[in-house]
Each structure stands twice: as structure tokens, then as C-alpha cells.
Image 1 (cartoon, rainbow, N blue to C red):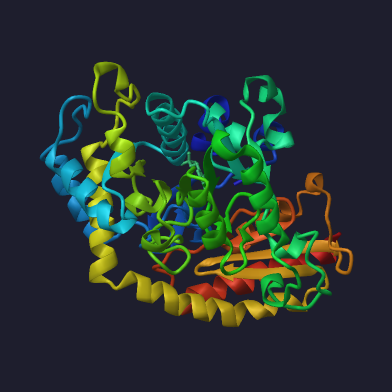
Image 2 (image 1 turned 45 degrees about the vertical axis):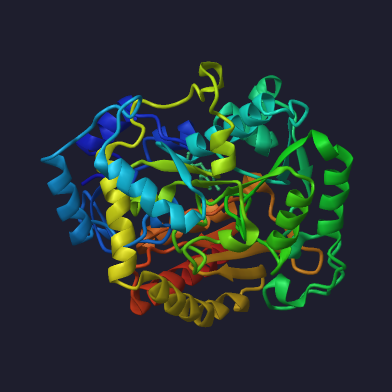
Length: 460
Ligand SMILES: Cc1ncc(COP(=O)(O)O)c(C=O)c1O
């Protein structure tokens, strides 16, 4: 077929669909033949032309046990014959109850408010914290403290937590003020005095935990006005897979509690085994007041998210009609999604998935050393099944390639042509494979990404 001639589904797509985070001119360019996914199985996705791709970003960090896992297919088929959907506003259903019950020991939090995506789970967290303080004697607690570069979703509330100049400048006037503390990423940390080594920058950092001191200063400054610290534990995903030095999260969590502010932990990306533990935060030790879950909650099969909340917070909404949390969505606790989430957790148990992730992570650690041979690699860092390769144009001065050069995007396009789908940011490449990935498939992903880096720098 003439590559200029779009297939029927591409033509329809280009005429009617709007893809998120996608520059339109590029997408609509007549020479651009987008990949149209037709089916998925295990760690593979197959396009309409029959070409197979390894899903190297777990379909935007959602997929857990591989595509179309037979137990998931069976459970959803069953559920569909019993109850498809029913409102959760003033009604309940057994799959919703069972899931809320099952999540409680995981989060060490008693209550769960369901929603449909990570942004909504985080938005609910912000509103719960705000309303809780207003109606429980601390209305002055309004300040949310966040990490620099934070990304918690695309709603107005979540954009306020993040404030990316590129993405948010048209909305500046709509965003509420928040306070940020330094991004705890050792590779780019201004306080890290270590000279460059070919290793994860966390392993050779030389600092005095200045990032924690700065956080303390900020919390002291806002004191009783601080509502909450909002934080992704261990890895800030969309910030560029910024990985925290061991102990950082625990230190700022403890500090937050000492200021009687709430600890809101965003596990939308890091949850469900991604870092090698069910949750990245160890809730029994760090004691979050709120944990947001999403993405992997349903195994990456159906949209669902959850805001897990302590009993203390929940109780703060009792006592009068006016204290009600007037917030929710039409599809809250959709029974199919809830059944998918329950099945996801069952597969975790029946297939010892966490052990599988740990074993696969060790293999990834071993084989990813290959990336150091490229002259433009400044940092290779990993947590569980999250790998980031940071490319720089000047190793000693750690100068990144200009964001507008979209180096990661171009390398990812080469990888796509070779059969691996993944999506980096700026000049940072990511590999976030499904847990069903075999060692051999993981080796293919690494090999193809490695070849794609080589090809890109040969071309430019
Ligand atoms: C940490 C984190 N929080 C929240 C979100 C928003 O989730 P969603 O895209 O499902 O709205 C994301 C999405 O990437 C995320 O990485």
C-alpha cells in the first residue's frame, strides 16, 4: 500500500479523534501513518497491519499482568452477565464493598472513595483535605506543599500542584497558589557535590540532605497554615522518573506529621508493584492520611481510581448534612471496573506477582548497564520495573538537550519502527514493562532501545 494513503481507520481517526498530549500538526501530517492497535496479548500489542510491538510503557503505565489475561477476561465476562453499572450515589453493590474491604489492608486506611482516573482521585484528595480542615476547626490550613516538577493530573486542582510552564501557561490565572520544595533527584540536585560517575547518581551522591532541610524550612514557614504535603513516593513519574534517595520519603513524611499537616501520597503511578512492593510508600511506617490509587488498580484494563482515607478524616464529614462531601462521578465504583480490580489483586496472589517483579527487576538492572556505553548517557536509574535513561549533550556539565528537540520522542519513534512502544519525556527515555514480560522479552526491549539510541545519534 502507498504509505501516503491512510487506511480507513486512520482516515476516520484523523477526521474525528483528538489524542491527548499529541501535537496536532504532527498527527495530522499526511505522511504520518499512526500505529493503530488492533489487539493485545501478554506484553505484546498488535497493530491493524499485523505488526507486533512489545508494550514497553505498559500502555501509559497502567498494565500489570499483560494484556487480555485469561482470568481477567473470564471475570469480566461473568460480571457483565450480572451487573454492568449502577449508581454508587446512595446505593451500594457487593463488588464495590469487596474491593473497598480488600484495599484497606493494602493502604492501612479504612475508607475508600472511588473515582475513574488518577486525576480525579487526586482532585478528591485535595477537596477532602480542604473541606476537612474547614469543618473541623483549622480553616487556616490551606497551603499545599508539593515537590518541584510534580505531576498529579490535568484538572485545575492538579495543575495547581504541578505548574509546568509549557503545559499550564494558558491556565495560569485559574490555578491556586501552592508551595514547592526541591525535587529530590540526585542527578540534577544543585546540592550534590559528587563528580559524574557511570552509575545511578543516588549511589554516589555527596550531600548533607539539603533537600530535606529546605523542606523543613518551608514547612516551618507555613506552620499551622500547611494543609498537606502532596508527594509521589520514591519516584516522581512524569517529572522524568526522578528517583528519590533512600530514606527521603520517610524523612519528609515524618516531618509532615510533626507539623500536624496531612500526608497525601500519590501512588497512581507507583502503586501495584511498580517499584517492587505493592505500594512504594509502606503505609504502616509512613502513615499517610490519604493515598490516591489509579492506573494499575484494575490491572490496566478498565478506568478506575480510588482515594483511600483515614477514619479520622472520614469522621470529620459526619455530624450534619452540611458536612457531606458533595463530590462524585456517574461511574463511581463501576462494577466491571471493581471486578477488574478485585481480579487484579487475586492474580497478584495466585501468580506471586511481587516476587516476579523483584526477579525481573534484577534482570533489568543487569542488562541495562548496556546503556552506559553511549557517550550521551548521564544517568541510568531504576526502581523496580521503572527504568530511566537520561541523555545529555554535555556529560560533565549535565546539560540536557533542549526540550523542544524532543530527543526522547525521536528515539521512541525509531524504537516503534523496530517493535517497541515506549514514551519518554524531553531527553529522558523510559522503560516501564508489564509484569508479564519474560526475561527474553525484556532483553528485546533493552536491545531495541539501545539500537534506537545508536541510530538516532548516527543520524543527527
Ligand atoms: C503520579 C500521577 N498522578 C496522577 C496521574 C493522573 O492520572 P490519570 O492520567 O489517570 O488522570 C498520573 C498520570 O500519569 C500520575 O503519574
